[in-house]
Image (cartoon, rainbow, N blue to C red; front, side, top):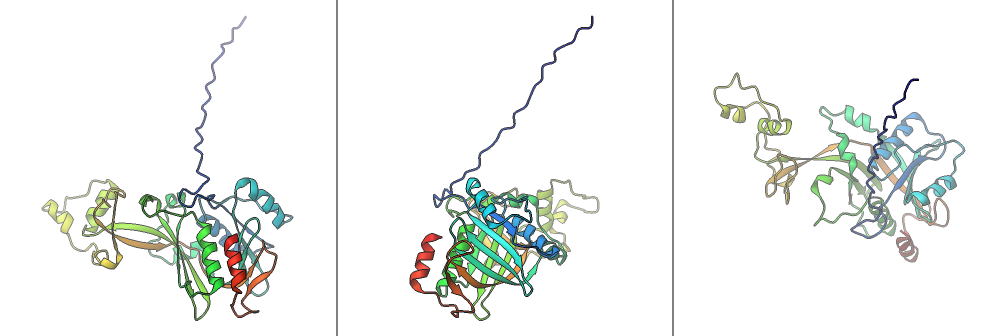
Length: 318
């Protein structure tokens, strides 16, 4: 009779690393988001929705599935167990597309009219050397707001909302290697429009030739056959000027090492590469609740003025 061997089966257990759920700076929950649509969107706005999901990484649902029968209550029921704190909702009317930014579960909700937008792929095609490495999306972007300090209450609420979408940082303890993206919002008080931009951050050492920097970064043995001396490799002309990187206005002094070429106590030039998406927004309405409740700001109704008591109450809810 044939004999059967019992082969031992080894199973590997993948180690699950629990991500922190509490912001170590503010002590609050780390902000998480859902980006979805309200109603049917054309293809370009669908792509804008995916670009916004990628921008909100890593604390967002990149592959969130939507169905036609889903309503706002369905997303809200799912948001509680998953710790989702914000909704970004795209919609389209006959006149213009709109973006709603809301705090869950009780609001407030900010409605923006999208005057213009460019997809990430369009921004990349417009650049000679686009830069968007996948590893930069492992950490949340920094947020910088400019022009919002006019004293108007609706702009204060806009500032608070966008600041709370992303995790807070402590400049004394933050790891520089995690700061690889930045979201810039600039408010123009003349046009009342907000320029929304998304960049990757790149540091380059000051005072180092481009050839030497590329050699250190690539780990490749250079071709020295056409050179008389190794110094020719470092000083050879024709590989671009470093005058831009030596500009004091664009340089920072590092407190710790960042990669192989940016070392502590040395100066490095900060360069921003736009990765998109790009939007021009106009705040048109603020509602007390989640897409409902009293309207405490309406660009068409009250000329931009918000009652002080309502604004202070709204600030507490955020």
